Length: 133
Image (tube, rainbow, N blue to C red; front, side):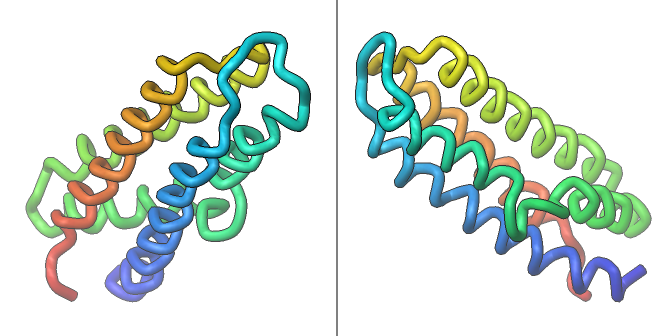
């Protein structure tokens, strides 16, 4: 319904803003191998930003908005939602692998920044499809 979308869109925007803060945590990372927990703390904080606060209801909000976009005659809403999910999953997986391996190289930082940018762009594409309410 329109009411659900009116609630979901601002929450998606808040979650996007929160996820954008991951970039600040990525900049705090120390490059190296066999890193200590303190060196990995910024990465763990970044990973948590994908789940906490406004991001905690993100999946349901994305589904609500996607469904509304489709019901408004724009079938690309489902693909845009899929891109959001895919990029979030790829970013989360990169965090998981990096935390598990306890290694951060220059390429890791570059990959995280690239994945973060792609994720934020996916949100922008989805939100651009939302018809005027």
